[in-house]
Length: 365
Image 1 (cartoon, rainbow, N blue to C red):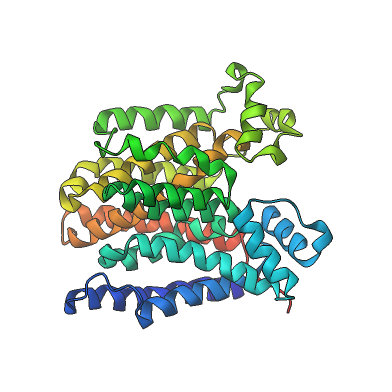
Image 2 (cartoon, rainbow, N blue to C red):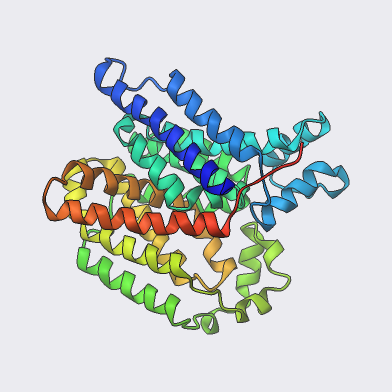
C-alpha cells in the first residue's frame, strides 16, 4: 500500500509540475527558459524522494556500504568518486549522496528536452510507468553517464564538437564504458538516421525477440577477447564468474513481452511521428533508441554483453513519450485513440509490476 501511494503520488505531483511547464511554454516569449519554479520543484521532489529510497538493487546496496564505510571505498571513476568521497568524508547522510545522483539524472533528461516542454507530462508518464526510474537508482554510475550523453546529442545537432567531446568525457568520469559514445558524433554529423525502413525494423525486432524468447545461444561464437573488452569498458566486476553467467539464462518475464509489443507499436508509428515532429532531434533519438533496443534485446540473456547498450535506454524513455503525445494529439475517435488506450494499458502493466517487484522502503536516518 505504501509503495502504491508513494509511486503514484510522486508521479502525479511531477505530472502536475510538468503540465504547468508545458502550459507556460505556450504563454511566454521565453520558450527555452528552464529554471522556473515548477521545473525546479519537479526535479527536487524526484531527487529527494529517491535519495531516501532503500534497497533498490544489488548495486545500490554496494554503493551504500561503500559510502558508509570508507574502508570499503571501491576505486570508481574520478567524478563519481569525487562526489561520493567529498560527501562521505564530510559526514553527510547517504540520502544526500543518492539524492545528488538522482538529481543529475533527472536534470539531464529534462534539460535535454527543454525546447520540447510540451512533452514534459508524457516524459513523466514514461519515466515512471516505463520502469526507467527503477533502473536509474540501481545502475547509478552508468545511468548518470547515459543521461549526460543525452545532453551531448544537442551538440551533435548543433555541430559543436568541443561541447560533445566535453560532455562525453564527463560521462566517462562516471563510467569508463562511456568511451564507446565518442564515435557517435561522426556517425550523425551529416546523417540523422540509419534505420529508415519500417520493414527492416520489423524484421530486426522479430529476429531479436526470437533470440531472447527462445534463448538462442550466441555466445558460442564469442571468444576470450570478451573478457579483455569487458575489463576495458568498466565491467571487470562481472568477469570473475562470467563463464557461469554465460551459462545462466535470464528469465524472460511479462515486462519483456510488454516492451516487445511497445516496440512494435513504436515502429508502426515511426513514419507518422517522423513527419509530425520533423527534426534532427527526433530522428537521432529514434535511431539511438532502435539501435539500443535491438542490441539489448539480442543480448538480454547476458549481463556483460547487454550492459554497454544501457546508454540508449534514455532514448527509449523519450521515444515512448513522443509516441504518447502523438497518439494523444491525434486521438479523437480514430484508431489512434484505441492504440493510445492499448499503450496506456501496457504501461500500466509495467507500473504494477514495478510496485509488486520493487516496493518502496525508506532509508533509515
